[in-house]
Length: 280
Image (cartoon, rainbow, N blue to C red):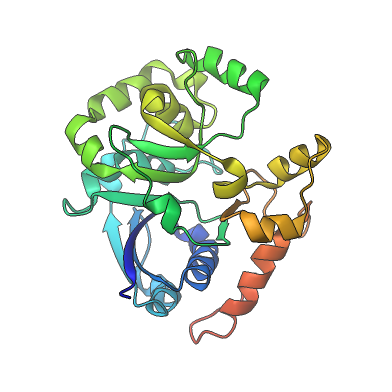
């Protein structure tokens, strides 16, 4: 059977290339049945820095398509070292990706893909813009709902994993509306990109199971505190995507938790590639 072409979107600066490579290595290792077409929206990356990225994708006959996107975001949008300007690019994916790309799976670079993404990628998206997971309990959801004035029942999602319906967004997205929202709500934006997506498009989001498609260390601890049976073996068998969101990164010496085992296993696989350079 012919392998399926999967469109992947990443948006980052040069500082995150090593972690992008680790994420993509986990993707191709866990999904031998796909051909990944990876679109990289950026404003500062040199093509010579992407040799290892291309080598990884070639393992599954995949390709990399860097797209320079500097002019899509003004310089006065809220940013920090943790949340650089590149985080906004995913919001405008429909504007910058080729017209023949009808859907794309956005993945943060601080992710390990631990299983097949085919079921997620083939989600029925008719009438919806995004599919994403929420990590919020009832209290946190209520706080975010009040902060952003979300309609009752609107999800507040984590934007690290987004299945994006580009066809629907091309028909309906108003880029001016996005910038107007940023201008009018600057002081409210804590996690800017997911605040914007949740506030403007929350009613057009399919909610995913975070234990399967956006598993985090915090979610792991919280589930266990509730008395539910979950261990690393459960994660290995059931969690397709593991997300190291927040400041607790597995490449840092002070990582706290158990899920860094998946990151470390992937780094070991990378070391055999010809363009691999040790991450300091």
